[in-house]
Length: 140
Ligand SMILES: [Zn+2]
Ligand SMILES: [Zn+2]
Ligand SMILES: [Zn+2]
Image 1 (cartoon, rainbow, N blue to C red):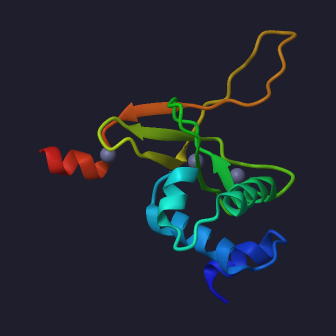
Image 2: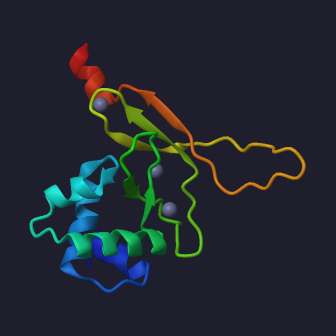
């Protein structure tokens, strides 16, 4: 069983070639992807299947929204302990000003905030803008 097949099995999703393709595109990209990015990389892109796949992957805890402050909705693979009840992706997202790619900073966590009395926490996100490793090397 491949690692992509394992991910589907772990999250109780039937193994289909389309789902496997989407996971392997995420794995190979190394940064967050929009639906359009995925469409252009799929050998047999079907927009409706793609949107359904992204929706069920998000519901099941396979991918999460990588909020990067741009208008484009991007997704990235989750950490292994996400499931359909809870996501644990409280990490910082890094947005590169040059290549416009968004990266999960898996081990850089969004700080916990202490809210004033009467305020209820729902979720938070933190974006760091800058220049990624790849762009930094090429501009030096
Ligand atoms: Zn998650
Ligand atoms: Zn970059
Ligand atoms: Zn992320």
